[in-house]
Amino acid sequence: MAKISYYTEEGLNKLRNELNDMKTKGRTEIAKQIAEARDKGDLSENAEYDAAKDAQGMHEMKIAKLEEIMSNARVIDESSIDTSQVAVLSKVKIKNRKNGMEVTYTLVSEEEADLKTGKISVGSPIGKGLLGKKVGDTTEIKVPAGLMEFEVLDISRFSE
Image (cartoon, rainbow, N blue to C red; front, side, top):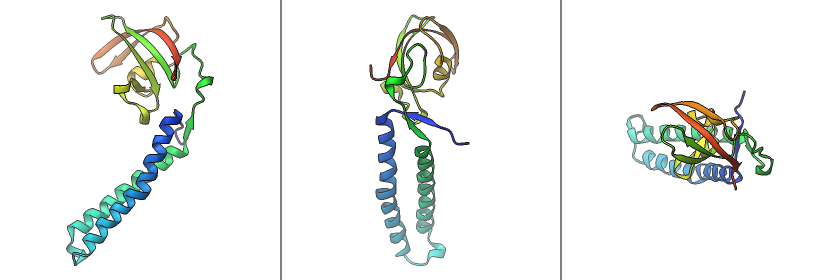
């Protein structure tokens, strides 16, 4: 069964543009590489030609994967997000109970995750540990550095 992924409108448009670039510019560039390698003579001993054909296969595989992701992608209506508990596209302010540090994360799909902008994947250890929690809840989450305890301070919509 295909995995449904939820995106912001911006995230889905980014995927759509990436797929379009791969289908147009990417395919054109690889076709050019194959033609240049073919012009260099005997194909049976032409490593450049083999490498270009391999690159073409990998590129087509990436396109197929992206098309599959797009076919199972859904845009979340942000106005319908329930802010009483943590869900996909929730903006969550949490406090590390050990050192008192507060951080705010937005839970997004794996493809949209970008820690620099405060977007973490719902599939990450922290994302999984926060799903379903309410303001005031504390949760212990196993992360690579060990066990951490967080308190949920605030939940809001992605765009707030």
